[in-house]
Length: 78
Image (tube, rainbow, N blue to C red):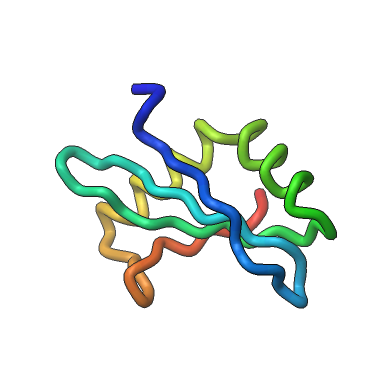
């Protein structure tokens, strides 16, 4: 199960950094974006890794509820 998330750098945002990752949900690969208020991409990545299990759980819940906007599951900081 460790290989079910792929993380890719995201272009800088005016309101902080966002991190995009792909979550495997069964046979589906779903794009997810975590918006943070961190100034650096490295801080945003570290935050995602620190809370990875919780964000995966939230993304799976939103997927089950059909809360997908523009092909993405959008997440914000805890």
